[in-house]
Image 1 (cartoon, helix red, strand yellow):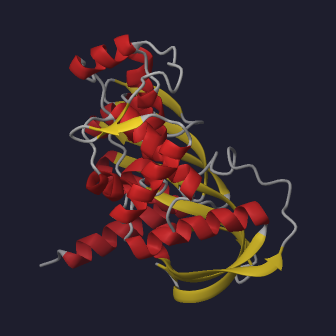
Image 2 (cartoon, rainbow, N blue to C red):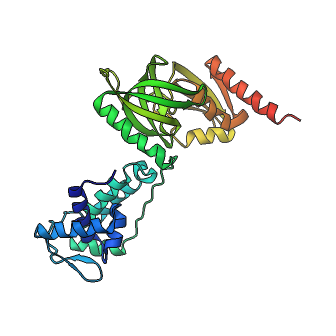
Length: 317
């Protein structure tokens, strides 16, 4: 679905303010409409007494249409970095909206900041790696967001790694970007509990007419508090001994909010943490091979042992 006309007119004005030599073809490409629509839009803008003329592209006849923002160069670069490094911008979700925000900001910069930014080098770069879904799946994001706003039940055809494809009715609560992908959390009527659904595993989705009464004890900020990554489970007290290179890795980074690291000697550390579910932490421990030894709980030690045996079986001569 394209922009509403009034939104498109403002978008064109911001394009003309922030860029040079834009003709009808380029404007049509930016707005996702036909050239004849752009010509009608230019007429509408002119009829609103906004002075525009054509000289190697459409331009303002006056540079005083919008008041300048009181940004300095560092503030502008920081805001631009935040917008461009957002997973929403990288993956295409809301990309048009973010591009529009950037154009609005560029359109009302002071003349001094405009001059400085043309020669400035952005000293910082942020690369948040994200899984990118195709265009067919990207439309699901809007359906999930609208269902959350309306408290509407979703009927979802979903592919689970463990159980395959199933059709579920879900009461959605919030969306989140975590662990390089977008997820949404909702109450699954099939599994009779809260579940986390990865967006790019959705095969089909429909927003139903049925409404649900949302629970008031679901906090998006605290939902993943004790999870190792994305998925939750029973809380477990974990204790691990790391040695050698693994110990140095553990000492030089933070891996969980409530971890406690005790250095036993130059090459040995004890690692204590409380996690919700052990599946993801068991996968993390496999990276360290024999340099990580689980002291508790027993079921985590058993899970790591089974994974190691499965790997050994694959490469057994």
